[in-house]
Each structure stands twice: as C-alpha cells, then as structure tokens.
Image 1 (tube, one colour):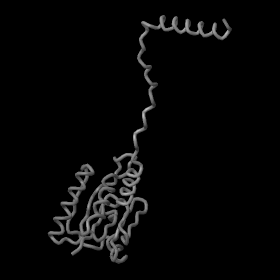
Image 2: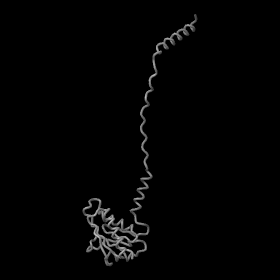
Image 3: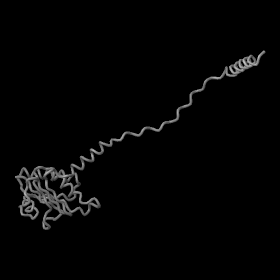
Image 4: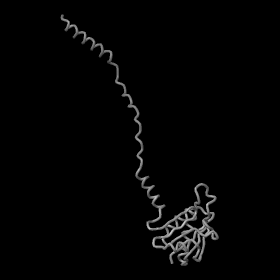
Amino acid sequence: MSADQGNDTDNGAEQRLFREAMRNVKAGAAAPAPPRNPKPRPRARFRRLDDAAVLAESLQPRPGDHYLETGEEVSFRRQGVQESVLRKLRTGQYRLDAEIDLHGLTAAEAKQALREFLQAMQHEQARCVRVIHGKGHRSGHNGPVLKSAVQVVLQKIDAVVAFASARPVDGGTGAMYVLLKY
C-alpha cells in the first residue's frame, strides 16, 4: 500500500467519525445583529430661519415709514407725513379728542382694547388721541411691555398717521399722542 492510499483511508475514516459525532447536533439560531445607532431626527433648519426672518421683518417699520426711538421717547410717521406735523404732535399742539388708559392690562388685553378704541375714534372722526401705557417700571428687565405692544399695534393700523411720546405734563414717556387720518 502506498503512502497516498493510507491518507485516503485516514481521511475517509475521519470524515465518518466527524459525521457520526455531529449526527444529533442541530443548527443554533443566528446571533442577533449588534444594535445600530438611531439616525438623528431631521431638523427643519430652513423653516426656523424663515420663521426668524419673518419675525424680524414684522418688527421693522414698513419701507418709507419714518421711525425714531431715542432713549425712552418714541416717534413715528408714515411716508408722506411732513416732519413739521410730527414736531407739532411731539409738542402737544393738536387738541386731544379722547384718551385711553391701558395701565394694569396684559399685553394681549391692551392690544385688543387699543384696536377697539382706535376703531371707535375713527368712527367718531377724532383727529388726535392720547394712549397712556405707563413707563414700565414694574416690567422688570424686559423693559416696558405695554409701551412696546402699543407701538407694534399703532404701526400696523393704517389709520394712524403718526405718534410720539407725550409732553411731561401729559404723561411723558408713559403716554403717546396718536394722530389719526381725518
């Protein structure tokens, strides 16, 4: 018998022994795959940027409107309104037809009350009114809340021609004169 024949019988015997030993062995379940890191949630980057741009734009005066805020005093005039009209308003040279006092209201309540007041004043054909909003001493570090809310409302109402902080005798920076269209 040659050396090659001996190897063949040894291999055949080994294979039989292996099959015999493995006859009752069953395949096990596959090992679970390692957990994947979850994908990050998509972020609406452009929507947030758009929302921020809309907010910033809404707080800016409309093109052509002249708006000046120096310290605590404020003034505003629509495009086409002469500077002399705003000067007369600041110095209290227009007769006051009515006034509204917004002290003690929340910003939302004050905005609603102001809109209703101005609508009624237009109906009565009032020319100049005083809006008392207070100086905001109790508003904390956020500054005068009602004063800011009043300015936003006044700028959005087309019937408002101009507004300016009142003279000290009429409330100073805690009130505004508002000039309405005839």
